[in-house]
Length: 213
Image 1 (tube, one colour):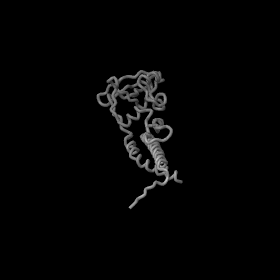
Image 2 (cartoon, helix red, strand yellow; image 1 turned 135 degrees about the vertical axis):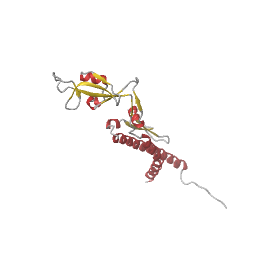
Image 3 (cartoon, one colour; image 1 turned 90 degrees about the horizontal axis):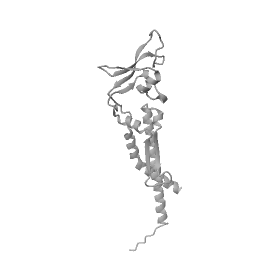
Image 4 (spheres, rainbow, N blue to C red; image 1 turned 180 degrees about the vertical axis):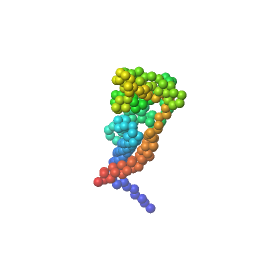
């Protein structure tokens, strides 16, 4: 018995085309996985009511920046890693100097761009001195001798007779606080990673169909 083996077409060209298809498929899959993960992380932040500004700190980038490669990779990160990380892990927060953490009450108001005020900043803004009030049960307080305005903020009293003057709690003082875990970034990252093989296969098939058509 005699067998003849022949190859139709140029096998080198065919293999090169397959390699190019694979590189395109891997790169497209990583780009899609990175973009999906970025969208999911941003959605988590907004659902947790942490604000669109913080959600927009989530960014993604695919490598290589141009062209295709079997070694393509996607990077998803936040430009505010400390804030995002804190809400992702729910850490125990203590004062740096070992004393108190000052938690502003609604009467404290907000600083520039909606940021929480420190006791020193509050005194400078309101022109009032804060007074320490120790409590055996519950958090101790920093209070101001003034009044609440129509917006519920602690301000200086305008009364010369003392009418309407009140002791307004401005800050709660606690030794430590446990930040609630409001994000689960690892869950979405694991899902994105698990989806990559399927994305590669789907994109590879799509590239080959496109080349054949």
